[in-house]
Image (cartoon, rainbow over all chains, first blue to last red; front, top):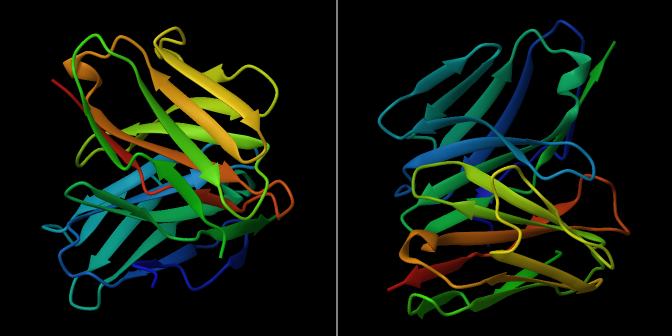
Length: 110
Length: 117
């Protein structure tokens, strides 16, 4: 049973618009969440994170929102750029556990 | 779904000894595997990219003579921490890219907790 879910395997967005990537988790004890970006044939690179004591963290064009009651987090990219086209992984860190979601492929169309 | 296993899941070793960690793709072939190191509440740090049949590519700052990587087959990559020291204690995670799948299919192992005493 997946502890971290990304129910959209793919997403297409027009350049300049907002991209919203979603992630759901099952364990309310998870307390630290991360987003990674991955290009083909490369390892994932860290993008942004959020602790459970916050509900929002912003870094440039990237904002992560956390809704603990819904056990849901989302990554907003605005404005989207063609270089943002990649696979995005949601991950949670809980104690010694570190679990990744299956990823969402984002395509930003020029 | 695709599964990546790591063995052992945890290991305790004495300072100065070497430890080998295995990463296996169980139901797919992986030309490329990645090794990461992770500290609590911090992001994963990519250590190296492991390519089947060739030398691994190490990230800047990662000692290749200390962290030996061997990718001898399409389903197995190993990371050997040589002459381990307490500061090597960490959580090591591997991931494998599905050669036969779409380019973004990457699967992560459950991790190996290494404690060096």
